[in-house]
Amino acid sequence: MASQLEFWFDLGSPAAYLAWKRLPKFLARSGANVVYKPMLLGGVFKAQGNASPVTIPAKGKWLVGDLARYARRDGVALGYPPGFPINTLALMRGAIGLQMRRPERFGAYVDAMFDAIFGRARDLRDEKVVAEVLLAAGFDAAEIMALAADPEVKQALIRNTEEAVSRGVFGAPTFFVGDEMFWGQDRMEFVAEALAA
Amino acid sequence: MASQLEFWFDLGSPAAYLAWKRLPKFLARSGANVVYKPMLLGGVFKAQGNASPVTIPAKGKWLVGDLARYARRDGVALGYPPGFPINTLALMRGAIGLQMRRPERFGAYVDAMFDAIFGRARDLRDEKVVAEVLLAAGFDAAEIMALAADPEVKQALIRNTEEAVSRGVFGAPTFFVGDEMFWGQDRMEFVAEALAA
Image (cartoon, rainbow over all chains, first blue to last red; front, side):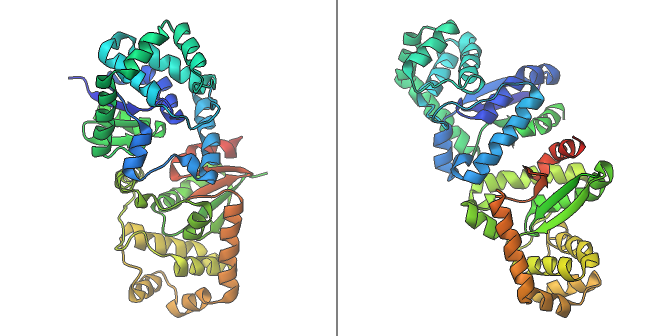
């Protein structure tokens, strides 16, 4: 029986981006099945009394250098878009909408969005940039916008976010192996150990 | 020329305890010289707008399990004393006082205190327990209390804490290699790379 891994993420988290870039090799090595769990990190923060680390200036400054070390080690480009941390509500509705309605395109969407936000520091507050990024990845912007406006999709994102909170998630990325929770791209070696156990 | 490592810590930090337990082998491998920097973490938190992670219940709960994984990996006992997080003002004055006046006994004091607090979860809010722990490590409790009451010692702890804040420290343990800062017992592999560079 293959182990199962849950990957909880928000497109606005640079640590989740680094984890996402590592996941293909990680999953190939571990042989685990992954369940992707889009959540709204802002909602998680609010419910748990947590906040973005950048709200503590010294921590935010250190974290930029810290994530840069991980990005260098992984050979991954890492930048920050204008206005970071950004509001990801519409982007995450798009993600969970695709997961529900066109799951075969979910990975390509998350790839395109993470690469735009943290790989190329594009300004996704600008709808024209979003449309351009979607088009380049083979998506129809109008279709994604319609998905993001669908009440069932909105409700699904709320449900995931509530589930995250109820299971103790307080940041991103968060991994679950069974009931064991791991927070951070910097805990993936422990995740691998749990999957191998 | 041997590399120099600064180790900033507070006796109330379980992550600093784990790092302290690892330091002897770490220093032997890296060949680095270490400068120990006692600071008052509560003062650092206040100045930086930060707080103990246990103030966010979900994060505090996760952190207990996370540090337990590191402790298991390192083969180190880890418990939490009654009233954790504890007030370390007097204990840290004792540490910096010994560093100033009897530096050859500094390591034995920090060892004894960390082992009592996180190795054996002793209640150091009780002065009788503190005296017992000091006696067992070959210290005279009255001498340490006199050190902790010395105005120059108090001032030295304030100065270290202010220096920590001015250099961007926001948590413990914090390592510096030159100007590069590393936060956490979980960043020691990056510290090793910086020392080797």
